[in-house]
Picture 1 (cartoon, rainbow, N blue to C red):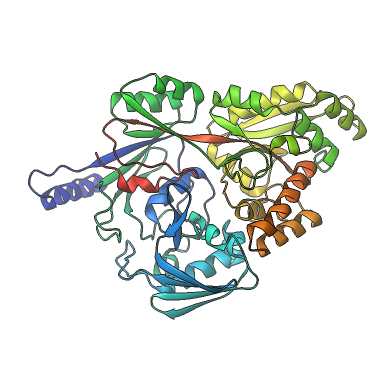
Picture 2: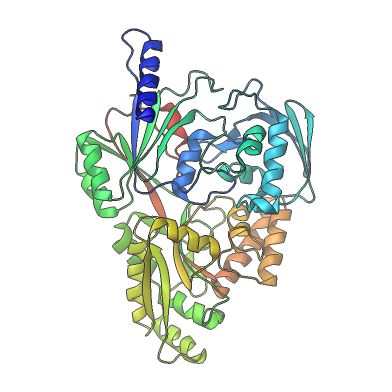
Length: 500
């Protein structure tokens, strides 16, 4: 009862503070799964990142065209290829009222680098040698070696700037938030809703336009669409292809789509038998038909891809140049026989009944593998358990949706380097490590391109993970929504500019 009274009083105070005749502008976002924590330096799930998009800022961020633009750093200087000097915005406030300064930047980057944090973003900035506060608004970062993807890595939510004081007070930030973002956390009712309110001190002039954003957790895609049609939801990210087709047929709705850079994968724990044998992994790769998976699981709303997201056209090799990426069932059976499995074998695929958890993809893969005598049992687990299994590397194989990037180092180094932060496959290969090291140390496209061409071929041959496709980013909304821009990585940052 006390909580209800407190909330009621808060709403009355807000209403009294608003100009006469003003109406609170609220946006309701429908999502199909709950956030698994809010600490930007720890979280890995897309469901968490979509909240972090609105609560935190980074030194730099992406615009709608994936170009790197200023965020908390209003500018930066690069006097040489291992030195970056960031000039911070002045007067930026954390949601606790404290001003953000270089001390918080130094603290945040060191927290990411600390192995005890177990930060996924550590691999983006692991080559940092020193971080120095030159003044309250200038930070100097020195690298141990050139890193072509350094700025790109800093665009990740996993490299967000947090309040030093808040971390010292709370330990981690999974259930609280300590950002500078356009919105602040007001209330979180697990598996139901999360309410964010406008940050009145946000550094972008006149933004956000909205007073409040509410995330409502609605697991069923059809129910998300029904909510948008009924007007109880303003915007929803809908990933089920059949549901998107229904939305496109409704003239009262707006469907926005953009080719994404996130990557659907089917990967293996290569320390478990029989996946410690590359012949087995190659055989499964040869049994996979990406176009069939896209047609069945995505209703055609995706693009087949190899190790580098297909949207990164300057880097990505065509699939016909990647070994074991063109279906060949006879060759697959031959490889299995060579590996000692002439009659196939059985294993388990961990997945979850949500888009990110990839159940529909796993079902198609299961059917495709039957054609070479391999029996895949689906372990369909709830979302929290799925994340736990992912973190603990507790799986034979797993269908995932991985955050991609147009910069190959940022995506592939953390994913497949022997000590990569999200190398859940426990894959270790000296040749791959050498290529990854070389690719991040070179600074020109002409030098780097041959390295990443060789790397893509090597990864296709060694197959610790089978890269399947890049799904489209799809948002369904009512016609009152104006100003929203999609970003290929799925970020909701431009909720900040929505008007209704």
